[in-house]
Length: 203
Length: 77
Image (cartoon, rainbow over all chains, first blue to last red):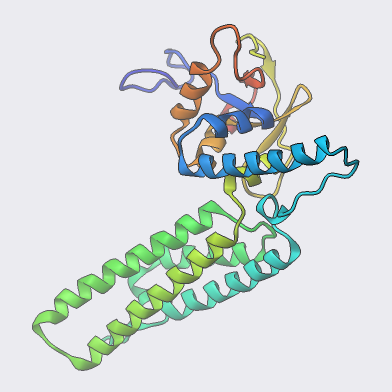
C-alpha cells in the first residue's frame, strides 16, 4: 500500500503497490549492501566461504572443501545441542510460570499473566516439536513473556517496599533468578544458531 | 526482471513448514520482501529502498529482483 496517512483497501479506490519479491541471489546482494548487523554478519560468512573456495579453485582442486560448514548450516551435533537447550528452556519457563508470587492468595505467575502465559506455553510446545532451529515468532513470544514477568517482579517489589515481608521477598528473589535462567538459556540457544540471513539464503 | 503490472501470477508456497515462505515464480525461488525484512530485522521499506537505489544506471545490482502482482493477493496480505 502506498499513500500518505491513509491506506487503501480493495473496492475503495486509491493506489496499491505491488509486493516485491527477492530471489536467493537478490537476498545475497541485499545482505552485502545493507548495514543491519544481521546482514553484515552474513556478508562475513559469504566472503569467508568465497575466499576459501577461491583458493582451492586456483590450486586446481577438484573437490572443494569448506572448513567450517556449521557456519552455513547447523550440523547434527549442533542440532542436538539446540534440541537439548530447547527442552531446558521449556522446563525453565514452566518452572517460572509455576512460581507462587502472592503467598496470601497463593497465585502463580501463570495466574497473573493469564492468557499470555498460556499462549507462550503453547508456542514453546510447538517449538519443541518443530525440526527447525530458530523460530522468530516463538522467540518473540518468549521474550514478551519474560518482559511481562520482569514487569510483574518490579511491580511486586515496589509494593513490598512498604510492607517488608521476608517470605514474599524470598519468593521474588527466586522469581528474578528464574527469569535470568530463561534469558541465559535463550541467549545460548541463539548463539548456537547460524546467522538467520545465511540460513534463509541456504533454504 | 521486472514484470508488467498487468502480469498476474499464481503463487504456490514451496515450503510448507513454518518459517519464511518460499515461492516458485517463473522458475525462480523467491521470497516476499516483507519476509526478507523480518529476517534482516529491518523495515520492509528499507529493503525496497535498497533495491530501488541499487537498481539504477548502467549496471543494476538486482537483475534478480522481481516485482509481481499475484492473483491471490488477499491471501498474501
